[in-house]
Length: 59
Image (cartoon, rainbow, N blue to C red; front, side, top):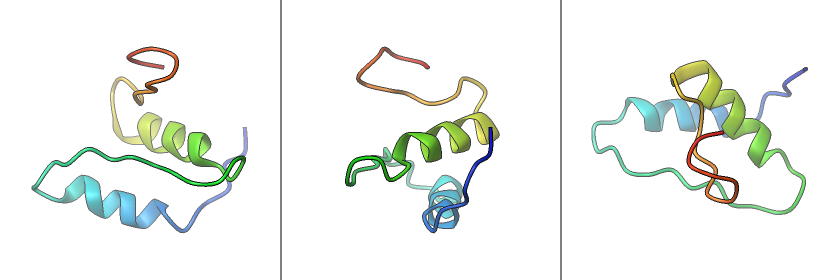
């Protein structure tokens, strides 16, 4: 699957490297790529992927 890079990708990477460890919530309009961005970041940088509060603890 092709992933279209988004402007938020770099700020999220900066957030991941910060020391304050606050949760990340991605909000926005419908069908703009929020889930695709979360999946991409989750699979790229985390062992268990990402948390989806709608469908269960780990997706």
